[in-house]
Amino acid sequence: MSSEKKKEGGSMDMTTGSPYKLIFLFSIPLLIGNVLQQLYNMVDSIIVGNIVGPKALAAVGTGFPVIFMLSSLFMGIGTGATIMVSQYFGAKDYERLQKTVSTIYKAMLIGIVPLTIVGVLLSRPLLILMKVPDDGTLEMATTYMIVVFIGMIGMMGYNVNAGILQGLGDSRTSLVFLAIATVVNIVLDLLFTAGIRMGVFGVALATIIAQIVSWLFGVFYIQKKYSIIKINFRHLKFDKILFKQALKLGIPSGIQQMCFSIGIMVMQALVNSYGSTFMAGFNGANKIDSFAFMPVQSFSIAVTTYTGQNIGAHRMDRVKHGTRAALVLSVVVCVVIGGILYPLSNWFMRMFSQDADVIESGVWYLHSVLPFYVLLAAGFIYSSTLRGAGEMIVPLISSLVGLWIVRVPAAYLLAYFFGKEYIYYSYGIGWIIGLIIPWAAYVRGKWKNKCIVGETPSVEDAGAQA
Image 1 (tube, rainbow, N blue to C red):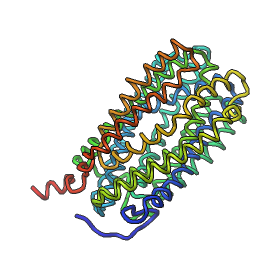
Image 2 (cartoon, one colour):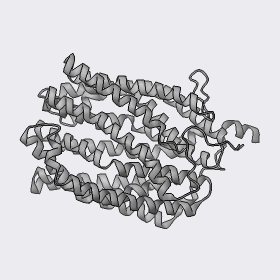
Image 3 (tube, helix red, strand yellow):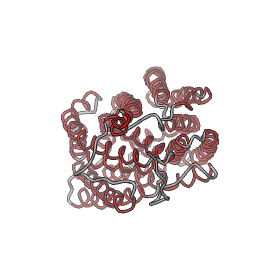
Image 4 (cartoon, one colour):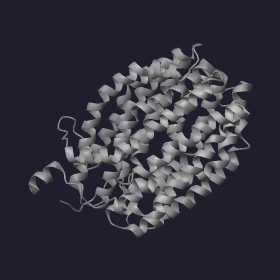
């Protein structure tokens, strides 16, 4: 049954008001949070690159795709839960909203155990498969990954908290959690590397401690500020029907993220084959690239929540207006950021290393991808609208085709025929396909029939109906 409640905490009802204003305001805390997240990651890279050396920088960067790949299936289920929360919140169905939160949290606490074990056991074999050089880089990368997997509960818990709050239209509270993690991480990074000289192990240890602190504070904060959500570890209820719905929505996203991570690992293997210096340049430039694209990522998350709430409220007209607003905002931001970053690429790379070859490698990357940002942005927005509506298969197909059929083969062909500095043009080639497929699905309009509100009873509801 549904019940009416007043706005509480930092939740935002996105079913009324200007789409431009709502998406923009919702995106600002996300953007600040993304800045903190990238600062969180860049501090690791800057400290490691300048204090420990280029091989350590390469080691920290090369382990991320493996970590992301092994955790992506569960993170996909979290994405499904976020969509469910946004649609139930839009429909004012607070009972199923609470049941969804409880179910996903219990699934996380159970699933984190096998994930940690598998991650620890597969870290070194996967790095060897990725052709990480055995010149000290392999050992450091293995150490980094094992420590991160042991503390994986912090990252997963933070992401679950953030996803729940984003579904409610609250993009501000997660910023507090992330700020705590960032401050703790920076302090511990400096202590463990510059002070105690623990190297890559110290960077990884700082990361997991910061994530766990942020996650636990998040649980405490949600308990205090939200009456419609309760996270009680002793009394978490698991609803099989709602979990199946989360799987239905989340598995395509999880597969997409996993396949994307494997594709990145294949690309990383190509990069790694050119040595630690080329790797270090790629990893440093990749941090800058991620930083530059943050505004569009924020807009895309906002569109998913905006779409979910309006789909739940059966406001299809507002979904189209919101998609258009996000496209305009994203294109403008991409043009501005690209225009600033392109001529200053060399200067930004110097934050990570003073090695001329590392800097040159990073500049090759940035100058190859920045001109194509608009394509990537538009593809992100259309895919996010589809996800918010509950259409998960099209974004999956778009990602797989754009990455595996186009980008990865193009990278190897470009490297073979023209040289290593040309491999990054494969990104823009893949992004063209990544735009065409979700755009065509959006125009076709079948996503309008994917709403879960009114079709997914919980176990208790099913029993009552029987």
